[in-house]
Amino acid sequence: MEFLSEYGLFLAKVVTIVVALLVVIGFIVANRAHMKDRQPGHVAVTRLNDRYEDMKETLLEAVMSEADYAERKKQHEKDKKAEAKAQAKKRKAELKAEAKARKEHDKHPDTEASREAPLPEQAEADAETGADPVEGEVVAAGEADEPVERKRLFVVHFDGDIKASALSNLREEITAILQVAGKEDEVVVCLESPGGMVANYGLAASQLARVRSAGVKLTIVVDKVAASGGYMMACVADRILAAPFAMLGSIGVVAQLPNFHRLLQRNDVDFELFTAGEYKRTVTMFGENTPEGKEKFQNDLEEIHTLFQHFVHEYRPQLDIAKVATGEVWFGQRALDLALVDELKTSDEYLTSRAANADLYQVEYKERQNIAKKMGIAAQLGVESAATRLFSRLAAWRHHAQ
Image (cartoon, rainbow, N blue to C red; front, side, top):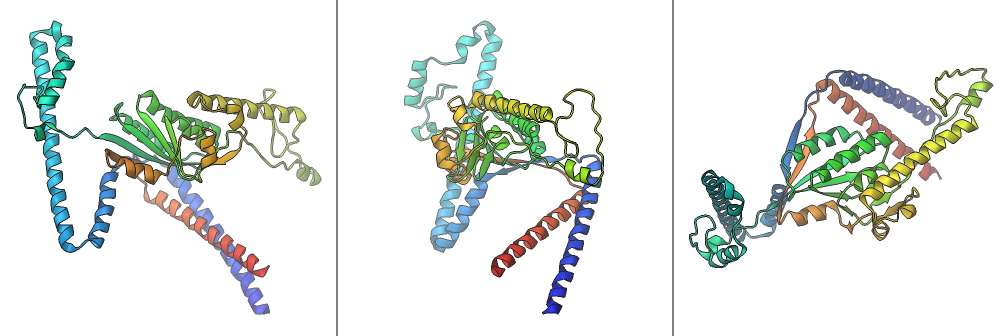
């Protein structure tokens, strides 16, 4: 028994030393990578319709008979060709209309406005008879029924931490999307964040506000949590969707820090702080915090809270801001009752439902990472994984001992 105890103590020491070494190595490598010039990244685009279609086809191939699946695949290919032909015909008609409009403009520039749009009664007649609005030719009814132009949804994922580290990618993704998105399109942000630094999340919310300023519809979907700074981002949306047990709200401000003044005083250690300006430093970790400094720090928090409330109310005027700006967090159904969200729906449910009548494009900005940075990230992940396993085993051991 004594041997096992000594062995366990030795093993704990070894694990501690290994983890410490990994932390130091990861920190050094990550810092070196960060100090180097940032490598330019690129925007990766994935068409989600194709992903969903591949999943569907994989399952159908497994559950259908070989003959039935072959027949279905043949019909599917035929439908795709017909759709492509219809789209090509529509594009050809649009080009002819543009060419005709330019020709009319060259002949009669002063009457351009009157020639741009056909009379309503003529448009109705064309629709009923199947007349080609460009050339006035009558086409078959089946050829006249062209498919309605599909809308485009641009999907972005934001997984936030305390520093809103995903902000650097978000700003690139929004910039790329706004180069091509029109007023008929939609941007969907799958948002997960418990909040964090005020300035960082304020800038992240401003990036989303660019979408609305451009006149593009913005939808935000929350599957797990959008609290504090996360909700600051979410409230910018035209429409907020949330899973039934997602956590939302936390419209408040928090700041906390330890104070070691008495510990230093007991050990005869003096801490000297020099400032210029009455409120350059209000509270510190090592000095003695005065009542005046604490009061000023609290006033600063209250001012930030007021700005937070005004920002939320600007984008969601239907909210009873005094009722929800208490720092509390509410789950999906209660958040819906308080108008913090507009509908209960998961991101998977929303995206798959829209895939039937819209083209979904997932947009992701990816940085090119050099070897040093990759090693730093790998070391960091390894340390986090080892620490998580260690704490889980310790918790299980304590529970078993009790």
